[in-house]
Length: 154
Image (cartoon, rainbow, N blue to C red; front, side):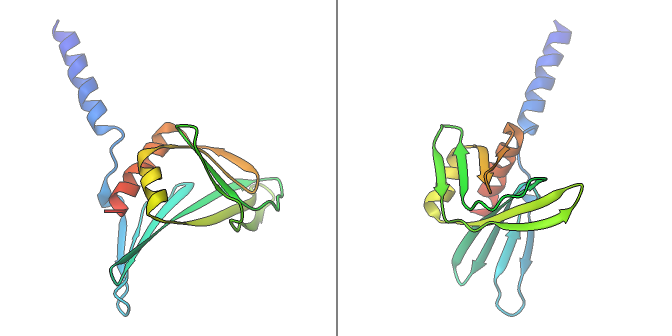
């Protein structure tokens, strides 16, 4: 009985700590001239950034992936855990040659309006696609992304 009680206690403790995002990990910088505040979440394949200037907040997500193949496709697609897909057909993709081992880096920056922020807070990203390349997002990363989005968009 004692062992099972201890096991349950440890599982509950682990469950409350795991999956929580520490808002203190977000870097905050204030421009000395414009007084704009930039908040940047730790680096992931989906990097979040918020710029607060003159009472307005602009939230961006930088999606990137490294791939050996060369692709000139445009567009960004984000598939959410409820099956809904956000489509940005004209989204500009930047392609940069890295080296023979890593190939190319594909990157795009999405400026998120209030509707997209609400969607990304409510639903986890399962897959995103840039330059025709699918990037699967595991559950832990999706939860971490949502946690940082909640911190940044307060």
